[in-house]
Length: 404
Ligand code: SF4
Image 1 (tube, rainbow, N blue to C red):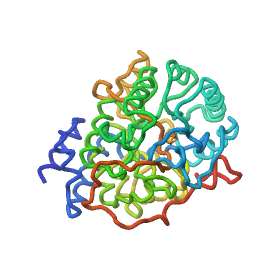
Image 2 (cartoon, protein in one colour):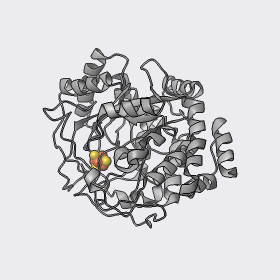
Image 3 (cartoon, protein in one colour):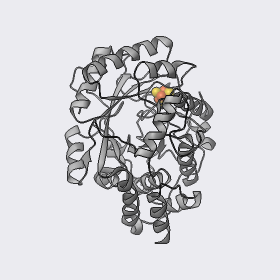
Image 4 (cartoon, rainbow, N blue to C red):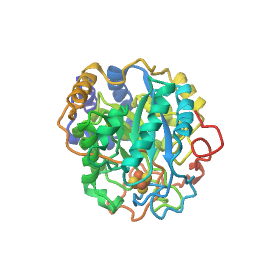
């Protein structure tokens, strides 16, 4: 297929496809799916070999958010019966983080619900990072606290944070239908602040919210333009009690096409299968590993994933290996750019100039006001799989051991 030959050749050279080529990936048929996965797999192996980076989420503060992100189970007015608790103590968070690291994670993602941190919150996270790094000096720490004010990114960087997550989530055009309490531009601003402080930028998207193919391509190109070093691809978990509870728009095949499109547009960037992996890829998860080079181990912020051991078994059975703490995730040419940017305290980790920003991580999801864009119907799933959505009842904020 000419399209896939072209995309593979470009990906192997680290070149970005055209917007039309990216759209064409999303329009491929199920008969072409394995060819699409194989082509994206060649690009993935060129830059990341057979390594899978494991990341571990610690929800420092759950629920009770004043923001209204439609997809989020922690949002204002959410009726989802998730765990709700205020800030974990540093030792509690460090205990959860230790479990993830012992399970094979090289990055710990410290996430707190909320519009953005106060300076006191930055102090709390500083203490938490110190507790984690005391036990595991090598562990990478990514922080996700929402919208940043001036100098907060610099404080996090000075305190030992390696990265900051703030997802763009969807296209600029549809952002206003997903969230009313802040803007796409606010998210861009925070990613730029993080980048400007020398933090590695982690910014991604959520698929399955009723967006069009054009929206998906828009946000993925925007992330490329922003210079995100890691791109988490979330598949909407339609939590009961959220505005998007009935948005079951994804099939495993569509998820794989979306992952492949993200890979072709970000050939040498960490592409992470994030929230919704088990719910939407289901038994096709191992095929996703041929495209993405990173996943979350164990549970998510407000929902449970499959057992951590099942993640490890899947990686091994599919012929991949867990990336070690001493191994670089990004290809050398990307790491050099990121290090130079960090040293200079300015953005520029990806191939292009920065441009936009993002927000909190793979939060669960519920909201208000479904998007106005026409839902994608081709290749979609009209069956509700509510049975697959499991609210998290273990790990951080509970008396039960974390899943790792
Ligand atoms: S995504 Fe973040 S800011 Fe939005 S409602 Fe959820 S916790 Fe709040």
